Image 1 (cartoon, rainbow, N blue to C red):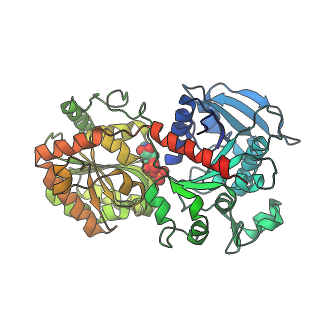
Image 2 (tube, rainbow, N blue to C red):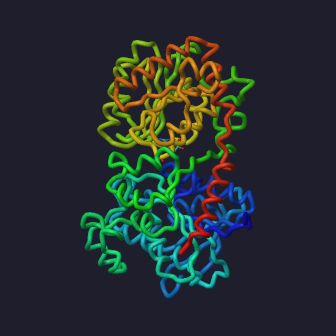
Image 3 (tube, protein in one colour):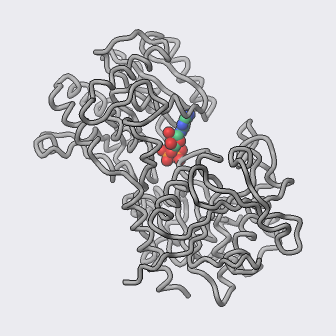
Length: 486
Ligand code: ADP
């Protein structure tokens, strides 16, 4: 089998630690780092957002102009690594206060189609070797709708690299109206239902689904689920048509950053053998959230975007019922303002048991993972999810809905899985308040059987979630794409 080092252009709209809104950023550093460690020449390309440039530190000018435009290409390094990052620098499009997709009030930038089309055009020109960079990739790995037009642009080239399109979340189709299609002067042939057109709009994501050599998503279960109308967001027919080019590869985690043995953001480090040290994190967590310090009381942690997808409405629904169990609940996140308000009103009702912090706080997220006993993820759908991996690694037992990557990474607890030492968490099999309550009740009952509980914790902690094995699956996929290309 040919296992030569590959040249890979990794096209993404966010990368940790430069700019992050969700799991895509974590994948966009974890996977390139693992590929680089195994000898591949991987280069990341992102828009030169103000925040990203600030966090990147030193950059140099790689290209003074891209073609005859006023766009520059800057080059930096992924912090603490040798992985090059190219920044598409167009200040009027990317150099703004706010997030990568919208202003700080949460409203999308009105020119997102132009912003990401420009980004895609530059990535395409590099991939097609049009910019005299003396470097052409073998593989262009495009991620989510923000990179969806790259495979479409490349499809017209005779000599082109192979393309992979990864779906991190199919809920975001990158939809824009017909008028925008005209304004961007996109290829008129693309205005067709079997190309980019989607119910009289057009979808960036469809560019990736139609034109890439291979499509993958971030867990085997989600790869199957998106073939159904329940999870397919209208793309299920197209995905079924391309099913022989569709697969699922579970994400890994950055084990340097998320490791209870070395984590600098938690109060006390611990591992499999020094599990009792976890209690100091629990105490720190209770203090941080101004809850009574009590080593015996189970704490349930929750972190995430407060949106319906993540099941925060289900959590809100069952909070009063679980209060009967004498537990503490700590929550960190932000999102839907109605959900935020109703969760906060629960907190005011039970000030000694529920504490919520609205906002984004990386170090508090680490302390919640380290200090909680259980971690709740009742997502309605979850392409992969990351927090269940962190929870397993930190000896914090996950309670998850059996969907997507959660289904693939957590083993439910019942007599047989306790007996054969494979149980790692608790699952609900229906995204309803009743099912959630029943899973939490099972977890709380098992919490009191200390031997079983400690066994479940250890089963989770001893698993390997490093990127190394996921990266090997990607390399195989890259080789398949090179073989089948064209
Ligand atoms: P998604 O990408 O759908 O938001 P994931 O579970 O794949 O969900 O990844 C979310 C990532 O963002 C995790 O690393 C999680 O810890 C982090 N995260 C989400 N919300 C917050 C928050 N409010 N504060 C700190 N980290 C957060």
